[in-house]
Every structure is written in structure tokens, then in C-alpha cells.
Length: 84
Image 1 (tube, rainbow, N blue to C red):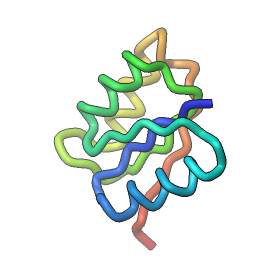
Image 2: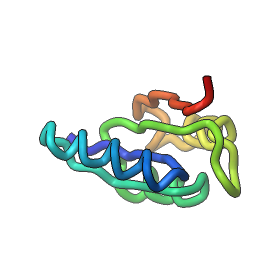
Image 3: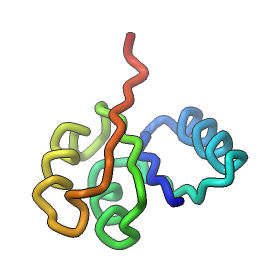
Image 4: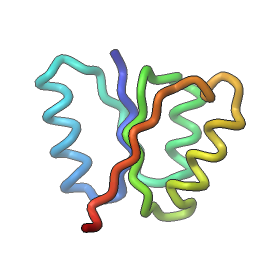
């Protein structure tokens, strides 16, 4: 199973990538919204972990674009944020 991790914080991205890799997932990382859309379209991951606060494009805009792209529309998306 391949998971696309979309997170602009290098620390959080590496932490999530390591945890998922240890759990035997294949991980693709993207640091901004544009990179996330490109990776989702090209790689068609099985799931996406999406941060809401991203440079270049908000997580909300990325989610909206994903759901309008037929090949990517069926990919499950889990929304994350480090705000609390």
C-alpha cells in the first residue's frame, strides 16, 4: 500500500514517513499543494495524509482539486493539522 504524505513541516513529514515505513507502507512525500497534486495524479497512491496549512495551495484547495480529478477522486484522504 502506498501513502502520500503532504506536510510542509520537515520534522513532521520525516516522523510520519518513518512510522509508516516501519509499518511496511510505501511512502511518497510532498511539501506543498502543487507537489501533492502532481504526485497524486502521477503515482495514484492508495491513501493521502493531507495537512491543511500548506504553502502555494491550501489543503482545502488540494482536496477540492483531488475530488475534481477523476483518476484521483476515489483516493481516500485523511486530513491532518498540527494546530490545536
